[in-house]
Image 1 (tube, rainbow, N blue to C red):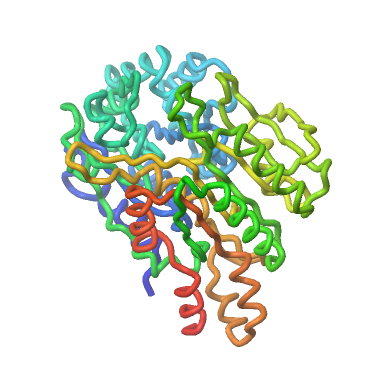
Image 2 (cartoon, helix red, strand yellow):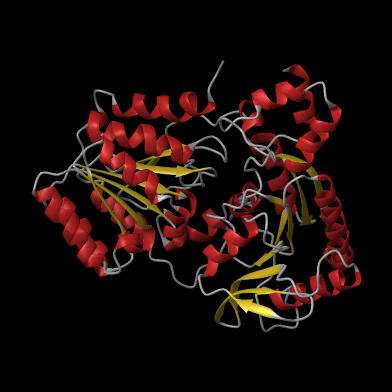
Length: 470
């Protein structure tokens, strides 16, 4: 039986780095695609990095993510120890220059190093730029693994809109340029993403200096049905009916909470504050007011409980707070991490999360069972093709496995087989391990949901059929 992690992530990596001509494949980023639940991080930690440090005797392996908070450094520190490498991380250093100097010192002493870092620290400041230049000048045998490569490796300002669908006020492609520079001395430049972009797919030519190449095949969703949550309902609504759509979504969500055995949470994507008479009214403040007013009329929660969190920039200020129906609120001093921890905590009342741009990566909240967006953007490239990367990323936040029971491994197959003749337990499993989405009725969202259900996520109907075959 095919293993979606081994066959689609591990073996293609091992085949690539063992090629006779691999050391000649410089000036290139090798892109690996993998979806939620497939085991991208697991493969990096327990297969890729040991092969690079031990099998290839690489002097330095760098694993970079958009934000430090999404990375489990304990796993990387343990594997560094097992491989006889020194471990360094931006989490342990407030000064990036001091961090890079420490890495240089270890390498000069002959010690291999595993460095975990965030994209901005690696490439956005003078310390990171100087470190990249040092790697090239000293011809250091290094490997770079860039997570969430779909957005952060766009090669130039001119391509940004056609690749992402967004018009930037300023984009300097610092991470692409950093990797391009280092790719002059190493072929071990890797990118990981669930949603390869148009440059990765060779639909748009990247800026000169470094090419992209997708290494592995996309894993069929059928192989991941036991390792992911399942889509139950997908409803598209007209923005003119958004108030009714929100009330409908809240009602269905509370019904879902009644059937599930574990805590369920809901994320809502709001519109940014724009000073225009034609601006989308569904901002953080407006959406928060609508939800709290509705919940006050439908008393499913205690009035003084912090049930709704805001994780966004509002009126130019970072807002990280939790709100109750009675108007009271709590400022979250620990920011995103505190909010996400409270959402995951089965004993904490926090249930609803409002965001604007957050949630496209690093939103590791396994009990998300409902998502609603008020962003009615239509994004197309210059040829008219829909650009759905950020839309797929949002939907992908809900696919994490959430069965409501303890499993011996990250796979539902054995448990589902044990309950296949028990309709009540099957319904309970589906209530826990499924989700609903409510989206504006636009051409881009339509395209995104079609691709999502075809390639990324199985439905509840398909899950029931799968359980019956076990």
